[in-house]
Image (cartoon, rainbow, N blue to C red):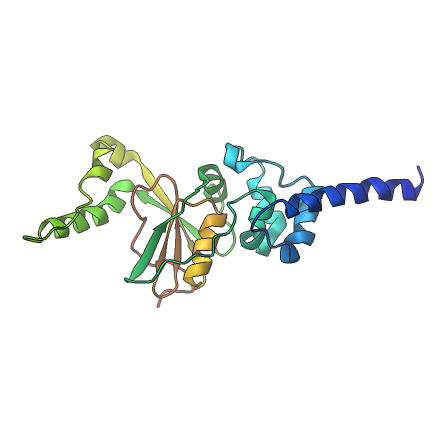
Length: 223
């Protein structure tokens, strides 16, 4: 086969892959096109986490490297970026992410932690203790028309389930903005995020029933 005959199929495949980018809303094609095309040509990002298939998630993350957070939506690995921010109104700001991808989060937090991140797991009972402290405080307010969260979180679990369930969260080593924190947690398939006002970011996994840990554990962002 002549060299020219090899170039044509490769060029056709590349054009097809680039056309996939153009159909992906929110994808930053100017930044991502080159690296995403490389990973797609190597068939490292072919699975579909949104359908529960995350068999290629780690390989795809390694292929995209530092561009994972910005480009994972270009290959359908995470939800399209939403640049809305939540106002920082307390010592930490929390928010639920509307379209979590549990299989993606589990794949990225199992085994050895990705670079520049720390994975922490702790009993759900520890997480619920923060929730119940808040409920107790609200219930102690007299003659106030306060809507109390109640025990809906706890009532969905019996005591044995609470003792057995583990909440897994991810801390990023470095300080990030609240916008970056939300984008990073969306790119990991997280269910929620907590952004501490010292700029430490915590992504909260699907097994957590409240908002993760109130402890700041970002290696390079503790002050």
